[in-house]
Image (cartoon, rainbow, N blue to C red; front, side, top):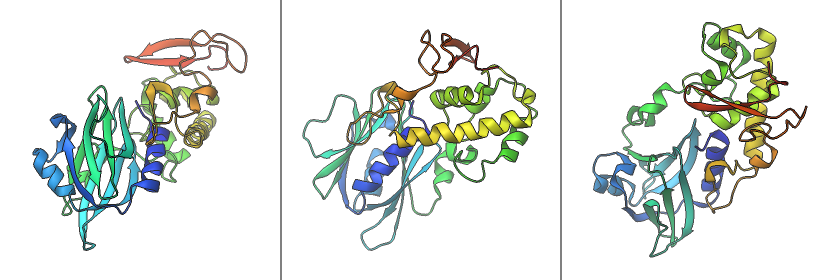
Length: 282
């Protein structure tokens, strides 16, 4: 599943190439991809004639502010890539790829394709009289952004102090912190030297400080690398990310630790994999 660095990579790419071109139409190839409104025709009509003014990211959600032809607000286009979603910016083609679910046509002669092999991704058109979180329910429950000032050491300490579940599970909780998934949780725990099974409440202040720093470090490196190649991630031009070449533990089971050469292990926590070094992480 694309995580914060991958979604941020997509956002940056979309802001570079898709802005200020009127949307002249579109095609929905898989109806259930559209989460709001219920009518596909209403979704396309809401977007038609609007320009994409600016793309934002909240957690793993992409949000495009829309502007109508005369400068009036046009609402929002919301996207969640889920497990396998991709956004591709291409010259308009008569034959889209096999797993293309939605096509938006622009007056520039290009199109924005939402490609999604597993079909879990969703799109929303939010009318201008609503805020995105009023229509996209998942936005209302998100925790702070991990690279924002609201995600502080005092906040993280308070959020973890009474939780008995393993720290790996807590980092995947989007109500605690937005945007972190399996890959970067494993990486942050390795850098901070914390075993994924350690109960949150057992972490002392100095270990939480290290974890806070490590979370920001791995996400920043991931963004700079343009995301990861894991899970077949591509940017809007179809190019793989580069983070997987520098991963410390994720998806490296049986390979030697890059620090101590102990073989990396994998365990299951609440149905999710956790990769770790049994020597470096306690």
